[in-house]
Every structure is written in structure tokens, then in C-alpha cells.
Length: 182
Ligand SMILES: Cc1cc2nc3c(=O)[nH]c(=O)nc-3n(C[C@H](O)[C@H](O)[C@H](O)COP(=O)(O)O)c2cc1C
Image (cartoon, rainbow, N blue to C red; front, side, top):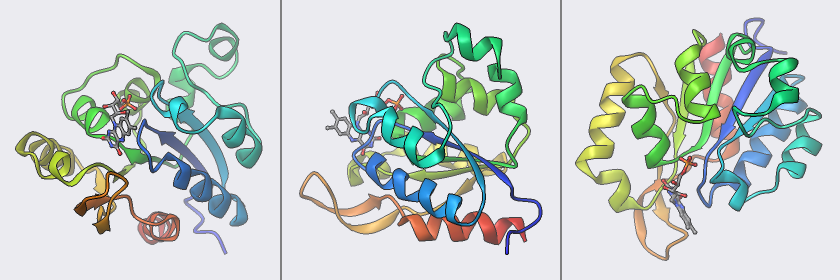
């Protein structure tokens, strides 16, 4: 059964290795009958093709602010108003920094600045990037503004090192969203 307040989710995918896990997040949300729109940063497209997200979400994927067809239909401001929640997974150090400082220089950061929907971030990065004081200060800033942080977990990382910075598993991300919507 869906939490009644959670019917539409905007999933923003950033440029990290864990982008492949975001495909599973979409599948699990769709399995619960949630309408999912995917937006990707330019970096994310180096990791997973937009065709995969289009196939699992059933909707064209948004990747750029400068998309005339998309802006003529559901423009970025309308898209920012559309979701019941925004989830950024994986959330890179770069995008977290942009959100903390109010940048709006790509589609994902602009949507996050233009929305009043709750924002959830699932950080994923090398443990030194995660523990860096700049990243920690950015996370503190975001939390102080009401952004919910899911994870990250501790364990083996894609770089071969071990530590905090692994993106939470898709089920944990979906459970966090539903938990907040109850
Ligand atoms: C192979 C590779 C893996 C990367 N993995 C991560 C990652 O897991 N987390 C992260 O914060 N940045 C990672 N980066 C760096 C980001 O891709 C880079 O900072 C980029 O500017 C992020 O852009 P975005 O936030 O717009 O997606 C990786 C880069 C490369 C080349």
C-alpha cells in the first residue's frame, strides 16, 4: 500500500559509480506504483545510459536545462513542482556542494533550488571525499535546511578502499522515503 502522500518521485542521478544502483531504486518505486521521473547530470551519463532509466521509469529522461522540446512541455519549473519528493541517488560531493551553496548551473541543481518538495540525498563517494571537512560542512548545511540524508554506508568501495561513503542499498533508500511519507 502506498503512503498516500507519496505518489510522484523525481529521482536525480549524479556522476558516480553507484549510478547503476539507481536503476534498482526506480524499479522498486515502480513496483510500488510510484510515478518516477528521472533527471540525470551530465556526469551521470558517463556511468549509465539514459535509455536504461527511460525503460525502467517509462518516461523520457531529462538531462539538460537546455532541451527545447522538454521546456515546451514540462519545463524545469513545472518539473520542480511535480514531485511529492526528490531523491538524489547517488549524490556526488560536487552536487552536494552545489546544493549547499545554492548553485543552479545544471538541471539537477536548478530543480532542487526551484522546488518546495522534500529532498532526500543518498551520498556515494570515496571515503576521503566523504570525510573531507568541505563535504561534511555541506552536509551540515543541507541538514539544517531540512534535507534528509540517507546513509552512506561503510564498507568496500569501488576504488578498492574501505570506509564510509558507499551509497545505501536501493531498499534502504525506498524504505527511507516511505518512512518519511507515513
Ligand atoms: C570513474 C569515476 C568515478 C567517480 N565516482 C564518484 C563518486 O562515487 N562520487 C563522487 O562524488 N564523485 C565521483 N566521481 C567524480 C564526479 O564524477 C565528478 O565530481 C563530477 O563533476 C560530478 O558531477 P555531477 O555532480 O554533476 O554528477 C567519479 C569520477 C570518475 C571519473
